[in-house]
Each structure stands twice: as C-alpha cells, then as structure tokens.
Image 1: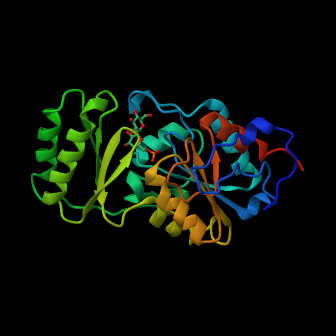
Image 2 (image 1 turned 120 degrees about the horizontal axis):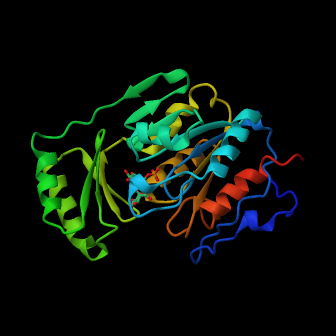
Length: 267
Ligand SMILES: O=P(O)(O)OC[C@H]1O[C@H](O[C@H]2O[C@H](CO)[C@@H](O)[C@H](O)[C@H]2O)[C@H](O)[C@@H](O)[C@@H]1O
C-alpha cells in the first residue's frame, strides 16, 4: 500500500497514536483495483454519528451515496453491526449488502440467504436483567436477537452499577460474555462476534480472494480488525484510537466518509 498524492488532506485527518504505538492516517488512495477490495463497515459511530438514542440514528445520505458508488465500481461491501439485522438494512437503504447483525448472531448473505445462530439463555435470565435495569434510573435494556444491551448514555453516573449488574447476570448465563461499547454494556454469547462474521463472509463470493479492510469505532469492532489483519488486510479505527489493533485511524464519521469518497476519484 502506498500514499498517492495528498490532494485532499482533510480526508486523511490524523489521530494521535497512544504513546508507543504507531498508528497513522490511512493512505489517501489504495493502490488496489475495486474488484480486489472488500470493505467491512460498522454502523454506529462509523457510518452514522452517535445519537442520544438508537432510533434517532441516520446514515447520512451522502455516505450512502458514496457506498452505492463504491459498490457499483466493483468494491464488495458488508455491514458488521451490533444492531439487529433488520435495523441495519433500514439504515443503509437503498444500499443492499450482506449484513452481520447482533454482533454476528444474524448473517444475511447476498441474494437474501440468511442464517441465524440462536444463543440460549437460562429461563428467566433476561427477565432478571430487565428487572435489575428497571432499578437504575435512566438506564434501559435493549433486547436483540441472541444479545442484550444495557444502555447508560442518559445516566453516565450509573456506569459502575451497570457493570455490577452485568457481572451478576453473567453468573446466571454461562457461555455469555460482556463487551463494552459507547455508553453501553453488551451481553452476547461467547464465540459470536464480528471477527467470526468477517471470516465467514470472506469465504464466500463476492468477498473470497479480496483484500479485507475492516472499519469501526469501538471495542466490539476489534475482533473484525484482528480477523482482517490475520487475513492479510488492514483496519481503520474511527475516533480516538486508544487500545486498538488497527494500524490506521480517522477522526470521525465525516472524515471517514470523505476518505471513502476519495477512493472513487479517478487515478
Ligand atoms: O456495531 P455498531 O453498528 O456500531 O452498533 C453498536 C450499538 O449501536 C447502538 O448503540 C450505540 O449507538 C446509539 C446511537 O448512536 C447510542 O445511543 C448508544 O449509546 C450506542 O451504544 C445500538 O443500540 C446497539 O444495539 C449496537 O450494538
């Protein structure tokens, strides 16, 4: 991979690396034909700016337009999200791409073929958690296919209570694990994550044989980054780049959209 020219410097906003780690802006242009590139895109905080509530979120029209043009040029795209699949489809419309939803518990390939790996909870565990969350003011529980998310964006002072509740939930839910996102404690089954989904998609057309680039903004994306790197690809972390295995970073969703748009410019 090489830098081309820096004709659009703002597309390559540099995020300072944590001390001792070398992390740089992604090259302005990838010296790769579109039909060799596979992009694996997270949604919240990556394609869409973070909002107060998940239902307020929109992927900007310009970003969706850029993604459509990338797809039309031959780039293979997929979305890897913690959200339920149906929400991701709606957020990306009219773009139609393979999607991993609920951290990979749901997988929709091209041509509409879907698989779902259901993770079971002991009877009463979800209701127990719902009841615990109800005791924490302004904290709320999102029930997703094979995953649960305790949101505390409206109650940052409740973070340690949320962590304690999640820990007690895990004692009742063997085979489940906690992963922290932005103002959210996510509970999901061990072994279901975006890295597994990326690898699965990379075994299929149109991804097989391509160079994988995973792009995301939080801890839940690190599994996808690791998988892309292990397959010889790369990763971009969006936002402050602390504790990431991604070699590249951009400042925010706007900078990422600009960088993706710059990939469309003719050589
Ligand atoms: O994997 P992603 O596509 O990044 O999804 C991660 C989670 O996104 C949603 O929650 C987050 O975004 C909300 C809207 O910006 C925000 O209000 C919340 O605080 C964030 O945690 C979604 O609700 C979760 O289900 C996803 O797992």
